[in-house]
Amino acid sequence: MLSIFERADRFKDRKAIHSNNQDYTYADLITASNAVAANLLNDAVDLNEGRITFLVPPSFEYTAVEWGIWKAGGIAVPLCVLHPLPSIQYVLEDTQAEVVIAHEDFIGFLKPLESVLGVTLVTLESILKQNSKAMPKLEPSRRAMILYTSGTTSKPKGVVTTHGNIEAQITTLVNAWEWEKDDYILNILPLHHVHGIINVMSCALWSGACCEFLPKFDAEKVWDIIKSGRLTLFMAVPTIYYKLISFWESTNEKEQAELSEAASKLRLMVSGSAALPVPVLEKWRSISNQTLLERYGMTEIGMGLSNSYRGERRPGHVGLPLPGVEMRLVDSNNHEVKENEPGEFQIKGPSVFKEYWQKPEATQKAFTEDGWFITGDIGMLNNGLYKILGRDSVDIIKSGGYKISALEIEDILRKHEQINDCAVVGLPDEEWGELIAACIVSPSSELDTKALSKWIKTQMPAYKTPRKYVLVKELPRNVLGKVTKNEVKKLF
Ligand code: MLC
Ligand code: AMP
Image (tube, rainbow, N blue to C red; front, side, top):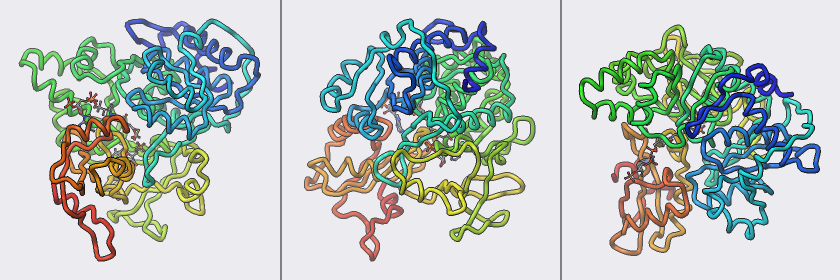
């Protein structure tokens, strides 16, 4: 049995999850996930890495489905509840999934895909129906999960992790941040990315702790939960801290004092997925008396670097490699750079993913010949701690903690009849990290950006849509005819 399930057996009577105003014990989670596994298996003895996609909001049921897929020997592919149909269809096609498990709110939405793709839609209700069956034996080397991440190619790639990778991603954080069974965390993050799935939900369940789900981030609700005093831990992207600060600032002095007092009681608050601006860290410290622990990670590696839980947490830095993570900073010839010199982070270790789903060439390109994963992030060692300086590709944008490919947005925009050509860039923004901006060449002299945004949202999730537009006659290009994105940025 996988360690996470063996451990759950030890915590049977403890509260595992709070969702939709209900408490669920580890015993509830074991029973429900066993039922999911038995229903998925039906007459089979092992799903043998069959891809099972699921569209379920963050909840007890989400977790039961994920664990059920694992127990039955399948690969769990969580779908994003914010994605429009074309993005979902892409994942279903790419994984060649035969089954989609869906919360009842999404059944009608997914229905058209049944005939187009021949995929079977299964309701949550039916997959959770009481059932039991012998489960297959799982080796740590078995593929466990596929998460989609944007890169320097137009379409997102499926990052495949094994059970061994996932266990390594969890245990390094449990050890470094001293998770224990009495911890209680709130999850407000989407559950199709590592931050919510691994750092929050899985670390809690590994530890015998409790994970409470709020299906969607809401600053007031988060502050209410902080005020309740039940949280010991909180983890979020910088944009969320920015929004919590804005809410705090909108309250009166008495309320502010209460909120600050409550926030100061948590044992740890973590920020990651994007650079934490130092003014946000400082403002949060003045409000909550908490120094946010900033760490660095990536879908392909889980978490790589972290400031110290007990030692120094230096603003603007991401600390040192986590236990079990090997890291080096190299120049363009893969030679290690010296302190204070910029280089690219490369990572090795048991937490590093297995492959991009059915993309052997992309997988090969992502590693050096001697097996280091090439992150594409640039940083340097500064007085004993690492600092992130940026990415080597301007085409990767981080907005609200989401990684977004400029090329993917450009490909979609070019499909619009009013757009001849375009260039998408990320503009620095205190709240969002970067704001997506599109420079458009159009046959018409005016652009109805409202109508355009509406159309884009039918093609892509809202968080990938441009927030600013500029209309130009020609895109700025260099002598070789290549669009110069730094010049594009100057147009806004
Ligand atoms: C939404 N809005 C944006 C926007 N996203 N505006 C600018 N830029 C963006 N990126 C606008 C909407 O259009 C809307 O405007 C308003 O904000 C509210 O929209 P919303 O969808 O309700 O936003 P909200 O729920 O507040 O979302 C913000 C957020 C979300 C920060 C909660 O972006 C989020 O959950 N981010 C986390 C992503 C994450 O988990 N990343 C981890 C990846 S793993 P209007 O005008 O309509 O009101 C990884 C590895 C690692 O990176 O290291 O962890
Ligand atoms: P994703 O592919 O969504 O997992 O995003 C991973 C990327 O997020 C990394 O490659 C970094 O560019 C970025 N990232 C994560 N944490 C940090 C951080 N603390 N500071 C700066 N960038 C970060």
